[in-house]
Image (cartoon, rainbow, N blue to C red; front, side):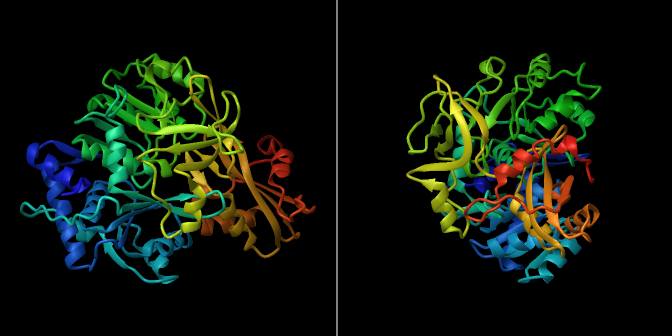
Length: 506
């Protein structure tokens, strides 16, 4: 019998059946109920929907009680779980559906039309509404499970790539279990029975891996919020004696500004990890004043989410560092010769360890580029000190990270380039007080194109967080390199203060 998520769920259902597995708003579900309900979903997917081992099954919807149950059901059916961002538009979902070869999509209420519109512009897939899942909630004990080889894909997490569009990061049972194992071996890590608060989407890597899977394998309780509500988050931290929370700096900043924060008892909180953007020192100190040391991390979906995190005792002493790696995971800085850089020398951050993905789904070229000589090449720029503490410096890639969410400039450039009259476009990152970064589009276009037309088009084809908040229309051609490529570096330099020189368009 392989070490699988489903086997762990079955264990907790037998040994502590009445322990709460998931809390969502005023609803909750025990481990026994979670096992039985997800098993009935798995059985239905196999017997009624034709899901075979290795088939890709999408899950489309915001945070809910049904989402984690459905996710477990997909995994137990032998299918490969493909979480889908419910904020995407049909064209964006179509790209993922095609890349993954999705045959079935489980859809939350209110998103049926989005699923139908996506299916209508490409290869069709079977739509399973949440109503079908609700009908399976009641019933007798059920432990239906299709176990697969631990090195076969269990999930595909799509993430934006530096050269354009999303790439499917493969997560196997072995890599997922390695993440769980490595995160339980230190004092700062997760523990069996840990209660975790999740205010991020379950469909994102932190929600799926650190929320649903780690908490579930360890027999803990996952408290899921529909969305970030700072005051409610503080109340939940106290009410459930939450021991673990994670997110981008924006989340910790918002919670710390809630009126309830000052008098809250946060003594139960043992694991608090923050990443995705630079963490201001005042924010670290504000949480430290409550007895909570925020541990800054460096990671990526390809490395299981977290490759390295600051040790608790060094969190305030080294506020711009993110640790030296993990017990089994190495994080190094390579120079341009592919050798370990000297302390203080900037270079590319590379990762090696059991939590690293075996590759990208159906994309051997990207896999070969990222995984070389046993190392995952991040495309990020970093530096290490004499003790090996890593500091993230900048991205070698062009990704825009807005509130911890990756946005691919090329995807926006393609969308804007479709507008009649647009001659060329470059999308860069603009400073944003709330989200850290936000997209800015620099456009050369004919007179009939204005900022409103560009924004309206983007709103039709892109998720709202991708729509540029700054649009600069110019008559002069964009600068180019001798190769003919647009000179992004020159454009970034010219518009480095775009947020102060130009008005926001949305």
